[in-house]
Each structure stands twice: as structure tokens, then as C-alpha cells.
Image (cartoon, rainbow over all chains, first blue to last red):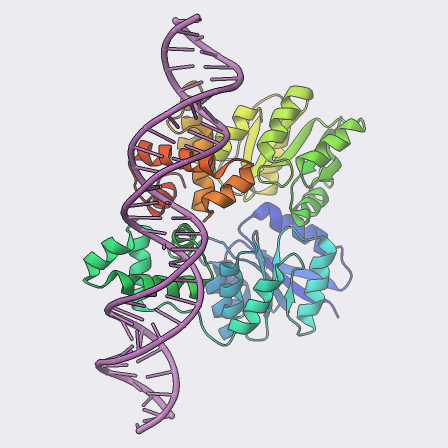
Length: 208
Length: 208
DNA sequence: CTTCATATACCTAATTCTAGGTATACGATT
DNA sequence: AATCGTATACCTAGAATTAGGTATATGAAG
């Protein structure tokens, strides 16, 4: 029985390459592909039913996280294997919380990808071997809580992205600087990001 | 006469995929591959002589820019086609100044890549069609004049936008933390921005 | 009632950042 | 030769940030 795959990635070159490689593998068949989450749902609406979707995180129109959430909700039998350039804990967190069953980075060997696909098919979770152990450990620990940002946290993130200091935010929101710092501390903890510049990066890449 | 290619990219999956695709193309043959600049030079030292090197920008050990410079200097007949995730002007500038003959992003179609390879072989320059016109225009305009921000300053800004601390940047660039701080100070002064978060904001709004 | 999530606030201490200043080295230009 | 731009490096000191901890108040839910 072949494992049926759909590959979704905004880099067509990458998609073409993966299709070429995976269709040479016994037991695996790529039945479809697309460049963003919307295209995936179009395929599914036509009745296409893969076992696993290889899904890139950063995509236009409908990104990896949103796609995964919708997929997990509407097509719970289809498993998501997340693909990313980086081992960033932000990315891992978001994709796995959205329902992905595995996470691999694009610099793994082809045979590791095959291993991952088979593991996911068997119902296991799979993390690429180059993913730091502490990230995997952190995930298991954090998996029962949603890293959801509160209204106030988002408000503070927005001001941060506009280059404001805690003191400036405190003045604007009529709060203590300590309150701002506490919210910031909570944000760092929830998102697993250690620097304020990393937070701004996160905002631009995830919210905009 | 086949166009001989070497593909250098730290993402093995991508390399494998590209090899599979390109070896199916009439007139093109991938004669070698590697995951960083050093591996390329090892192949060249063994006597391998490609027409074109498809070269990723971001790589460990010896990155795209350095590789291109050495290649252009020591093997002037071999042409570089730069590969990147992004249309960042920093990347374009650096690679083209280093001697690359073309610049493409990884989200182009396979057939556009084939077009690019043939153009480069013919001695033309090639920019992927999805590269914003203003970047290409900017390149021609800027190629004879000095950029306001120096090469090093842009490099540091880019690392900052990825959430790196001065210490991390110093480690990455093999410099003193003091040197990084001096460049940062100069950047703040030139751009009139007082916070690092403000700088990241500037980068995302003005460069990407 | 208790529990939980969120908001507000504070303290401590280490790290990082910013901004002022200093300096030398090197290559290119005049 | 001098000058300039860039890169590299350092020092000082204050401001800002991060990360550990503490606490109370309020509203909603069980």
C-alpha cells in the first residue's frame, strides 16, 4: 500500500525536485502539489485524500500554521509533516500546536525524509535529527498549554514593533514600567524568543 | 554540447531534488554537488570544470559571497548563478558585486531556471522575473555609487533583524563585540533610529 | 466557595544596548 | 606625501532589557 503525499510549498523548484525524488521511492506516491494552503484545500475539495501533507511553514495567501489548523480540524485523518528552513522554536511550537505530527528542516538528507514519512504514516511523531534536543523536550513539556497571546500582550508587541521602549509604552498605556516588563517577560516565555529584535522579527513574519 | 553544472546548497533535500529535475533536461548535466563553498573547491581541485555553478547564498563554512569571490578570481571562466530564498537587495548586491552573473530565487518555476541557465551560458546576465523591478533598477543605479550603509553595516542589520545579539554577531563574523557595537552605533546615527527594535522595523518596512 | 486566566505591580541582578569618546590599519584617491 | 572612507577595536557610563521571583485584584467558570 503506497503512502499518498501532497506537497505544499511556495518554492516551485523545491516542489518539483521533491516530487522527482519521492516518486522514485517504493511505497510512496506524490498525488498532488501546490504553492500555498488554498491550493491544498482546492485539491481536497476535489476529493483528493492523501495520507500525509508535506507542508511548508512560510507561504503566501494561507500560511503553514493556518493551513495546518484548518486541515487538522476539517480532515483529521490527514497528517501534516511540517517543513522549514530553520530550527526556530517559534516555528516548531506553532506548527505542532496547530496539529502537525512532525517537523523537519530542509537541510536533512533524502533518506531521513523517507524515514520521517514512514514514521508519520505509522502514527508516530517525527522531528528531524538536527533539531536541538531542548526544543523537542520543550515541546513535550509545553504541549498541553496553548501559547496564546492575550489582548494586552498583543498590544505591547505592536508597540514594540514600532520601536518603543518599555518606558514609552508605560507612558502611552498609563501603566507602570514594571507592568510592561512583566507582560514582555510573559511574551518571551510564551513564544520562546529571547531578544526583543527576535520578537519584532516574529511580528513581521507572523502577523503582517 | 551539454551545459555542465555543479549545484552548491546546504539543503541536501533541495540539491537532490534539483539534480533529479535537471538531469532530465536535454542539454544540461549536473556533474557535481556540495553543501558549502569548501566542497566546491575540493571538486574543482580534482579537475572538475563546470560551465555554471548554481550557488546558494547562505551556507556554513564558506558562504555564497566568499565562494563567488574566490571562484571569480581563481576560475574566471566558471559562471555563478546565485540562488536565494529572498529578493533581499543586500543579497543581490553582494552576490553580483562578488561576480555572480545571475540571481534567482527559489520560488521560480523549473522552466525559468532552465532559461536562466541557458542565458548565463550564453554570457548574459539573468535576474528571476519575480525580482522586483525596482531592485534591478536600484542595482544598476547603485552599482557605480557607494551605498549609504556600508556592506558591513548591512550585514549587521540583517543579523539584527534575525534577533541576534551583538555577542552572537561577533561570534558569527569573527569580530570583537566592540566592533559590532561600533557599527551599530554608526547605523543608529545614519538612520536616526534610537532603538534596536526600531532598526528591525526599518529593515522590514524598507528592504523586504 | 475554589480555581483559573488576565492584568497590574514590584524587586533583584545580570546582560545587553546606546551613545559619547578614543585609536590604528588599510586601500584608494588626490 | 596627505586625505578620506571603511573596518576594526577599545573604554566609560547610563539606560534598557531579560529573567528569576514575589504579590494582589477582578471576573468568569465550575
